[in-house]
Length: 501
Image (tube, rainbow, N blue to C red; front, top):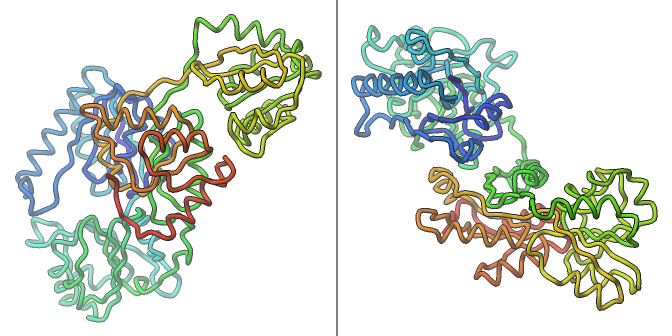
């Protein structure tokens, strides 16, 4: 059993240990405010259980109802733990800061269920930081107090607002929006000045983040919703956030590539400021019936004048089978684009030909005429463009299948629902386009298509248009850098928050 802190909202702030455990989970028990894209990190077969409580004012609010609900959560965790399942209890922020993680840990201990806590980045510190507010600052605040926004009878709530008012330093108030007016009144009654600076940060660290700076006297009139973090004290007037959040700041982009290939694009988008949802709609697998032929071709690669690769997957499955790379000394290497050439470079091989137009047609045009032998390392079901085009140029073409692409299982419904807030979706292959639309059209899939469709390469763009999608972004060069730049330029002309369809 693992009590894992999911962080303040930005899925990129999940710890590496948390991501590692999610990838191994059999059961994920999660709270209302976690970013649902994190659930895509769990195995497709994992049981996902939503135990999120609603804010005060909803039907199950109130102390008695919450206490009963927490007892149900404890019982659920104990049942799965005693059954020997690998359980991740995914909680917003840090499990032990107003997350009731301590209560769950105590219940697990009483039941004899072993547990481990994985601390998370707390919204109490991360949200103000994301808004450019250091909670301590020399000359302004040398201490910080984190408190829950409960009011009412001090003996019951445990919050002595009048005493907190007399303490120096910054106050960070969590879960206080419903009681903000009463909190302000009691802090002023305790001696805090009416013009004390206050900052309210809604949906901190996410693309939906909004910040309102006000005073204690005006806090009650701030019309933001939950979740929100309230910062009270002189530091609240500071605005030390970056002037530029990146060209994709505030945008959400869906990456549909297979997990083995998604990393480079996802990193590029995040560096540009985007929130990234990694949703693999295809998986890369071997073709057992072709394994012997692939191995034999790799062992006799020196027979060929050219080796032709049209994907990094083909490179990754063929090159390691070559017994000695020195055998390739007499071969020339053709790569369909920069990403495939980069995959060759990872094996210390330099592509001799990379066409200006990164497509099968572009590669055929760029290849010289000849009468020798070419080995085309391809995916199962690949089009005949390469083989037929090179044969027309006089080459004797042998083809060998290195891998196949298959549709991934449907994502959890929670992840699919989260895509409705995405600004753009990216595709890097026709198979990804087909798989995404198949999931969309399958009963129970209901994947929305975000308003902006971006494609790497003309072949992928043609497949998307042929399937009825309006391709808005198609960079001239089939590269991650080109896609990120083109996507930023296009989204810069559109308002944020359009949502999917």
